[in-house]
Length: 306
Image 1 (cartoon, rainbow, N blue to C red):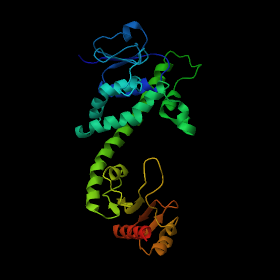
Image 2: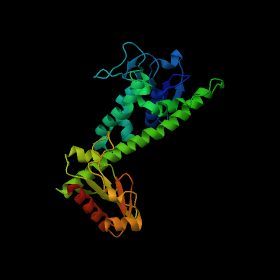
Image 3: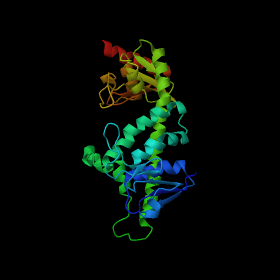
Image 4: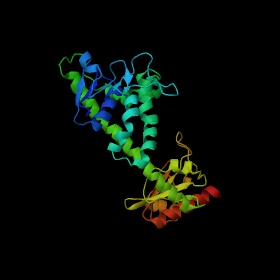
């Protein structure tokens, strides 16, 4: 039976049904979006997917609400919002529709669940306080989506629905960009692991282009690596490796005498012709050729080891 209607509640909106609509409208582009609390719409029937309304969760009949008691919980006791429920049942099909390789779907689905879906669910259920984001609490995606709601004195009949459609369009860009990034990270993982093998016991990892590399370095236990080099447009880049995801501290900094120097001044400080730039914070340097950047990398390693 084809899906003909996507049904959520009318009136104001939150991130969970907006993000659910992003997923469902990609999978069922011909379905009509209905925002209503009328019993005829929020009662399960063939051709409908009902979410964030209806006070029931029954995937077999196509209803995905979380406001009832008892509310649906993950195996670890963390609550679902409608977004989490939709992601649980439709997320992998959504990833396939975005051309994520079949071999990567399970990993990307789990990663996006943990980093994106779960925080939305927890916030929607009051399981975490918005202030957990500190001074950035007003800039989280759920808060920003709600700023698109019409003002209190906008009493046009279409105001809420127009705002909802706008919020879905905005949210779609963030969701799909997040998926693309996670899918790209999976592709990068294989390339980085190959490069780690090629590097052997060396301290410098050479990559064919700029890409996410830290997780592959950590997962392979390549603790001996200190720096990464790769081409970037017409130049070559030398970068440091952070000690972890939650810190800006590096395994090793670039030489302090390079900090903030450019062109001739950096060439003089390094003795490397073609050296172009080193950041004040000593985490990135640039040269105009592979030979030049590899020499800078050799000097950086020497400084660490001596």
